[in-house]
Picture 1 (cartoon, rainbow, N blue to C red):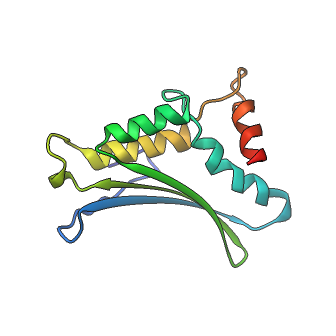
Picture 2: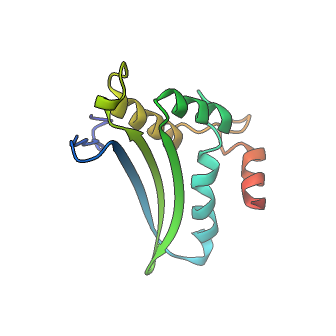
Length: 136
């Protein structure tokens, strides 16, 4: 599935597993100035998108995709900070009536990463979500 001129998702189906998954990772050099922001970004992004502006609506969307699920993490690997977005889903042959399920899950995951709900000016994260995640 070609996303744009620089990003392509390759999905390799297999009969070995009943579930599939996708993991998108972003790496940054570990530094004091950005470490806390990098840890917050995945959490804030999962709070809402323009089409699904709440955590609940994101969860409902994933549930409508035959119970797909999303998880985020931020980890330190040596001097690198890795922010990960992962989605798990049932393999299509077990999901009767769900065509293109992997593609739909990938599109939802990319929506979370690339189309977040923003503040009223459209130039930053929704303030309420950002503050709540900072507190968490």
